[in-house]
Amino acid sequence: MTPRLIVSDLDGTLLGSDHTLHASTVEVLRALVKQGHHVALASGRHYHDMKVLRDQLDIPAHLISTNGAYIHDPVDTLLAANHLAPEHAKTLIGLPRPPQVRLNLYRESGWHIDSEAPHLLSLHASTGFGYEVVPPAQMDANGVGKVLYLGDPKALKQLEAQAQEAHGDGLHITYSTIDSLEIMASGVNKGVALSSLLERLGLTPADCLAFGDNLNDTEMLDLAGEAQVMANAHPALFDRVTGAERIGHHGEAAVAKWLRKRFGI
Image 1 (cartoon, rainbow, N blue to C red):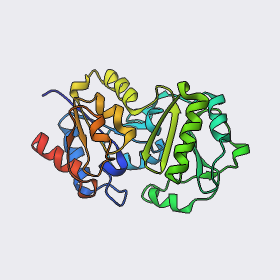
Image 2: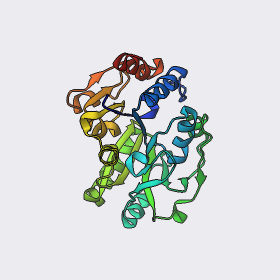
Image 3: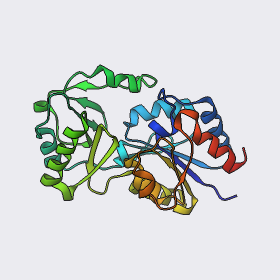
């Protein structure tokens, strides 16, 4: 049996509508690891946030966090870190934005936000991961894996255009949801991180099965030999990924159901 790498996004894909792991998902992934397959979680979430979910799975999974800025192995060794150029991060921190748009920085040590946003904590209730409020004038532009703007989609489109005009060639700009604009250094995305991980494991893209639901999954899905797009996915995602298969809804543990059928579990 050729070992496979099963890599999955979290929110909107592997996690249910309540942002937690379904019991059947845990069961299936544990069974696949026992069969000799590899598992990786790939998310825009922070590493410390993802680590809690991996511990709940209780399997030796690699973690691709912050949309590919960081890669950790199953024993938490940092394998790769890719940060925004400090001058680019400084520009992004200083872009004018409406007061209702939240500015966030993801760095290795944690999550910084420009103002209190209690509603965001509900998304991380199952992991307990939280932010630290830091005024923009005091935000450190060094060691930033991702700048994240959260808010009105129209305002985000304006911010996207400003970022593109300022440092477009040095940035990778994407969305994880319609109201979540995510900016990393150029060349940093889940697909590049996945390619590096496959090489490390001695596998090829043909040996990889990937699952995703949003635009920040595009490169990862496009690389994988078997790409599965969720029924609840962003409308544009399916057309962006060549040869993708549309599967069920994340709220119905569709990844687990598909894997059971694919591997005869």
